Length: 318
Image (cartoon, rainbow, N blue to C red; front, side, top):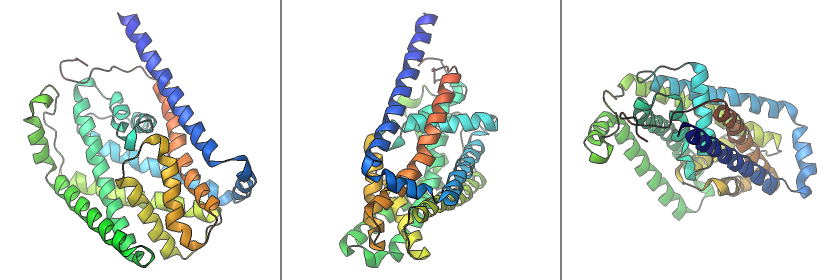
């Protein structure tokens, strides 16, 4: 029985790896055809900007790992190294699911089975803090950029985003009562949520870290746009970047088509800067490669090197 379990886990790991590398290869193949390889070489001649954008990967994900350590510490304290493995394993698994909703499944594997329900809940709370910051910045960008958008689309989009923002803020402010409500659901009683709560200080700290992280990955995209030859006023580019993140964060998408959607949104938003579509697509794809593809590959290495227990409730039953 134990050997069969090991075999099943190995097969799952292999399938994850095949899917992960196939998705990355497919996206790069679709984005970089033989016709634009020369243009890609020209972009890489802007070495300093690309190096700086790539180095910001460490700061970007370092902040996310810090957030993850902060929110999981009261549940189960793990080392920075384990937190790093947890987050990037989540990126690898999440990259294979629509809207990356499966990211929590990778993150919780590094915690004891009896606290995984709490850790999964913490993942979504952590995500809400980042989404709130993204929506606030995106709405500000929409207000600044309103003259460049269709008025009907602008009003509908801004209204929907504000409604979503208010809903998320209410959820975050009442998060402990939401957890109490979850405890009373019969389907969730088999999971251990006992003692789970989030202090106001912790939530404010997560919001603060989310703001810093937002500026970091926005700076990454700005550097890549400049490296790819996209020129424009800083306020206009910053507003367009904030709208791009707003759209990509609030519209669930299938991982398989994410890069195409990302490129399309970038071309629509930044087209007014009179740039070649290829330059915009290249910047978008490079951002995805640095922030998602690289962590996914390293996350898969973490999956291979670790042995996980897959039971997730307090009774030890899958």
